[in-house]
View (cartoon, rainbow over the protein chains, first blue to last red):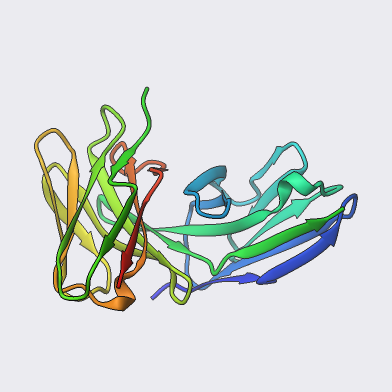
Length: 113
Length: 111
C-alpha cells in the first residue's frame, strides 16, 4: 500500500521567513496534489504536479515534484499570517480507469506576527 | 459551473443509528469519490463511483456503503454508527480520472 509521509507535522514560523514542507511517497505515481485546509473547512486545491521536474508557483507558495526521488516540496517564501492553515500533499494512485488519492498526514502551519 | 455540493453540512446522530449523506457533483462529472477525515486517521479514501458503478473501495467495514444515481449524484450510508465514525466526510467529483474537486464536507458527530 502506498504511504505518503509529510514533514514537519507542525511548523511555527515568523512572518517574513522562508520554509519548506516535504512530502515523500513510497511507490511510483505520476500525479501529486497540494491542498490547503482552513479549520472546519474543506480542501482547497493549490497545485497539481503532473510530471518529473514540474514546478508551479502561486504567490508566496512554490511546489515542485521529483518523481525519481518520490519527493515533492512546498516552499513558502516570506510567510504572512494569512498562510496559516493545514497543508496536505496527496498522491494519485491509478488502477485501470479508476484513481484515488492517498493523503499525507498534513502540516499545520502557524505564522506568527 | 456550480461546485460540488454536499448535504447536510452538519449532522448529529446517536450510536447504533444509521445516516445517509448526499453529494451532487459538478455538472458533467461522472466520477464521485468519498473520503473520511478524522484527527486520528487523517484523510482516508472510502470509495469511488462512476456511471452508477463502484470502481474502487477503501479499507472500511461493510457498514459503509454508497451508491450513485443516473444523474451522477451520490449517497453514502453508514449503518450502526459508532463513536469513531465521527468525522468530516468529503465528496469529490472529477471527469473520468482527472483532477478531483472537493465539496464543503459533511460534519458528522456521533454521540
